[in-house]
Length: 117
Length: 166
Figure: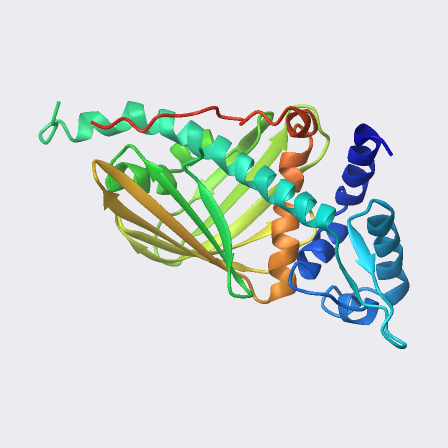
C-alpha cells in the first residue's frame, strides 16, 4: 500500500467514533472482543466488525493465546490516536486563538491604572 | 510550539492548560459572559454558535448550540454551574448532544495569575474510562472535516503566536 492509500484506510477506520473509542481503550493495554464489547454496550459481532476495519488499516493487531485472541494497538494505531488528539487540540487552539484576540481588545482598558507600559 | 497542553490523567481525567496574555479577570469574564463566549468557543473554522445562553451563577444553566456553515447537522451542549469564584475558578457539569446525549463531564477550570497573564487549568472528570475514551474520540469529530488536508501538510493551524513579554 502506498502512503496515500494507507492514509485513506486509516482515515476510514478512524472516521467512526466507536472505532476511535476502541483504539483509545486499546491504548490502555490489550483486550479481547468480550472485554471491548462490555464498556461500550455493544454486541461482540459489532465489535468484531469494527476490529476487522481497524486491523485491515494496520491500526490493531491480534495474537492467539489459547482460546483467547487479545487485540492490541499497532504502532500505526498509536500514531493515529495521537493524530486525533492533535486534531482535538487544534480545535481547542482555534478557539483559544480567537479568545486571545478578544482579550487583547478587552483587557487593557480595565487595567489602565496598573499599566506597566 | 503550542501554548495549549492536553493530557489524560488516571483513568477518568483530562487536563488542559493554556496561557493567556491577559488578566485572570478578563479571561474569567470571557468564559462567563455569553456575548464573549459566543465569539470564540467555536473550534475549527466553519462553525458558529447561534445559541449561547449562559447564566453564570451557582446553579445557573447554560446551553451552547453550534452549527456549521455548510453541514446539515449541528450539535449542542447543556450544563449547570456548580461553583463560581469570580476571576479564579469555575466548576460546572456539561454533556454534549450529538444528537444523542453523552455522559456528564465534570469540569473544574482555574485561572491563576502567571506573570502579566493568566494560566488556565481545566480538569475534566468523566464517569469512567470508556466514557473518557469516547469523549476524546467524539470531540475530535468536529476537527475532522477540515483536517484531512492539514494532516497531510502538517501545518500548525494557528502558526506561532508569540507571548508578548510585556
